[in-house]
Length: 398
Image 1 (cartoon, rainbow, N blue to C red):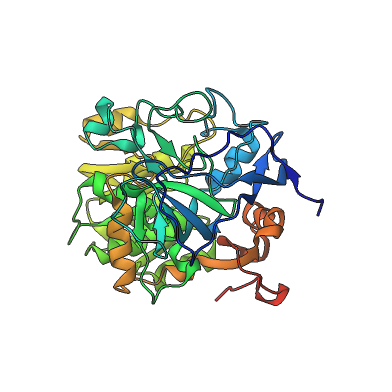
Image 2 (image 1 turned 90 degrees about the vertical axis):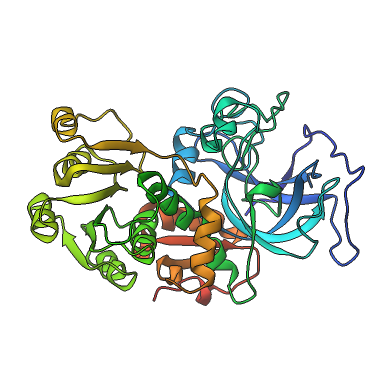
């Protein structure tokens, strides 16, 4: 590991009006990973940012790695920094984090210093058409709160600095208190469960008694199984190609699993549901799975696209139209879905820890990313902890 470099082109934070505490002293500088060229991260030092109005400074205690983080590191999108790709702009990625409130911006009294919180990614500008509709993950000012722009929008790890650092700024609307009974690692999974919750919310909210099919047993797909079951869906069907992940799906509440490698997925769904599924959530995002979703959904049913395909896909639009099937795309964890997901997790309605397989220290972020990218040792959700841990603690696979 090279000695951390120092970022010198970051503006000096303005701490006027910020509430701090002697119980949580704040250093002038922090360590942070910064993205240079594609897939090139460097450990640097930056000034600790100061929270503004309706904001808090969060000392990051743990951050989970998302597949979208890997996309940003390689391709840049969907991050948008200073109107373009995030490379070589002193940008710190990472968005699925939790931590402890270290300072409060002017006028903030909704939280206290020392509160443990987990976060949503998006805080809209609050003034555009979409934000005023409550669709802050579709904010029209996405990307205009970095560098010379300040439209009030934040999407930490996408358009503003994120969680691969020791501190980050969060809007008060994006923070949820973490109960004492929940570990740091489990708290990082709330945003993943919140994304799953958002998809089901857009499809119709309460799904008690409705059939739900989840395609793709990644972290979002597995927690979508858990959320759907907690909402009363029946049956809940998980489609995947990895036996171990399908097995975890059963533990999280799936009534049936389908191995897409050796079963006719659509025929099997029809057999299990009669006339097809009421709701289908596609967490794989391939041409095959999109078409499977179209043909396994019953008339008047709904499909949620929860994955970002790399390329344009062709699908049976005619079948979608003639069967009056509704198609929804979601971005992130909107409509405060993380708050509802936290309520389920705090009440132990499902055990999100089943998808957490590995933990690494902050200095070992490149290794953690490799485990997540290459699925080393059957990695599902990899968490980076700011606490020092030994090599023997890296794998927490159950």
